[in-house]
Image (cartoon, rainbow, N blue to C red; front, side, top):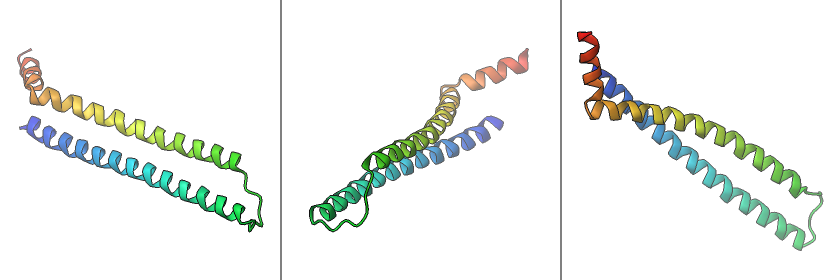
Length: 107
């Protein structure tokens, strides 16, 4: 009975982690798109000699890399959790977990 409960919980967490990973992928894609539009607009402003401020593209590049590194750290943590739940579910699905529990009870 506990194994069924664990399976349901693990499936829920695996689903939620997958959903979160998909949201991060969407976030990264949206960020890339908005940054491309941002730089395109800055270029157009510069082409038309309408820029009243000095924009440091180097600073933007560093900031973008730092932001991406932080997001990747979070994604890696989520992937590690997901891997753990997927591994546990594989043991449940193939019967290994049940056999281990039976062996433990008989020991």
